[in-house]
Amino acid sequence: MADQPPITFYRLQGCPYCERVTRKLGEYDLEYHSRFVEAMHSERDAVKRVSGVRTVPVIVDENTGVTMAESANIAEYLDRTYGEEAGA
Amino acid sequence: MVDFEVSELPPSEHPEEGETAPDFTRPLVNREFWEDVSLSELTAEGPVLLVFTPMDGDFPATYVWNELRDRAWDEGRDLQVVGLSISTPYEHRGFIHEREMEYALFSDPANDVGREYGIDHELDGMTGISEPRPAVFLLDADRTVRYAWVAEEWPDFPEYDEIEDAIESL
Image (cartoon, rainbow over all chains, first blue to last red):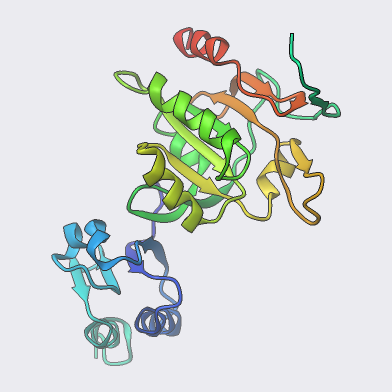
């Protein structure tokens, strides 16, 4: 797709772990593209193909080449990459 | 001869052949996920058949998509077939699975795209719900309308053979 933001965010509607990542992306004013996946864990093949797991959230960050699952890990990654400490 | 009454619909002001179809961005639902996609992103890749149907559920949308699935105009051809209705992404997902179809469907619950295309239809007896009337637009890579069909009565179904001719003369 043309002109896609570099971050793709695999998420579920109303999933608190996903919302945590949403807030963090907003905090750092990062542009991202949302991909909403199947609620049924067993049917989440789209996520499995990119990340190797069927859990959400997952982000794919083309800025850094990072693909990451688990909201705590993602939050920490975003802090490290785009927060105050980044480039310090 | 039909042995039942169909309702005539008032004239519509839709994009005609040779005009540029309005662009829009809406969640596009496929078998596995949905994401915001613009019509212009699809046409940038080649011709697009944009199919407006009644909401997912009973016979109107089902008949249209069974027919399009069986005709498979996109197979072996540079053409994308894509749908749009007022159904939510969750309904689209279920519909796609039930129909065992590969086509993706745009979700436009507020019917803004239907209004933008001049084909909105207030449903009798479903207060507060409007949807696009059945319509088919064949668009080339710069969103120019190469063929347009819009329902003039309710219910009504696309002229499949005419569409096929239009696709073949792209």
